[in-house]
Amino acid sequence: MTRAIWLVVVGIISVQVGAAFAKDLFGTISPTAIVWLRLVTSALVLTAIARPRLKARSREDWMVVAGFGVSLGVMNWAIYQSFARIPLGIAVTIEFIGPLTLAVLGSRRARDLVWVGLAGLGVLLLGFEPADLTVAGVLYALLAGAAWAAYILLSARTGARWPGLDGLAVASVLATLLLTVPAIVSGGDTLLDGRVLLIGAMIGLLSSVIPYSCEMTALRTLPPSVFSILMSLEPAAAALAAIVILHEVITPLQGVAIACVIAASVGATRGRPVLTEPAPD
Image 1 (cartoon, one colour):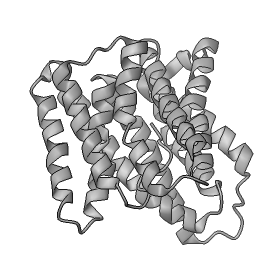
Image 2 (spheres, one colour):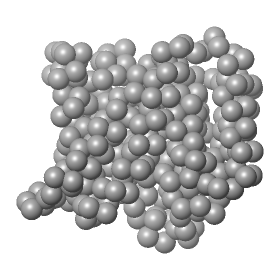
Image 3 (cartoon, one colour):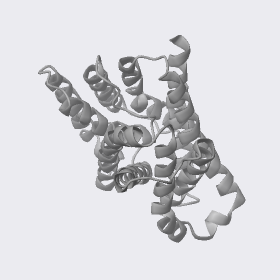
């Protein structure tokens, strides 16, 4: 189990390091264009690995995977828009309210109301230091969280209809197509820059290919409850990546707020089924 835990941790770190490098590139290329480059990379790799079979698919199969692809695209686009406006660690903390809310709504345990209150306290504490926040940045993070919750629900339905990685590969292609025109319009000639393309591909590997591989391998031996708790470390990993790579220092109060959301997520997911798929951020 120790090896599986480390694989999940590596995946979490990889996602947030990729996000930090993406944010560092925003001065050169738009967030929409960089998230599109990330999706292109992951779509190409996943399609090459899965080689999904598209024949004899029902209308329901395509409807489910299309919804999955839209949620994937919106989730990635919205969180990158948030990164461009507020600190990385805070954006991921707010985004995490999505899967946390989903976990609580799926529970009938009265004590889960405690975790709702703790998460609410964390968000409230972030509001006490609004200097680092913008309304648009917070709203984009909330949109990303809502899309993440939809992604979680649709991933289960997609997995039931599409074997292996087929559904994820098709959804990644659809998400890429969804953002193609906005990315070309906002990215312009920058998308022809070799350095930008190389960094975009690296971000795709760090934020999608590596964590997907690590987490899928880990889930073969790791209990779902342990996996869910480990995924609760995402906000902390985001804050650490922002400090090391972007030099975004969080205040003590913001650190307490992040800790509240992490603790709420751990409490809400203990002993429950996996509610978080391989982290898409």
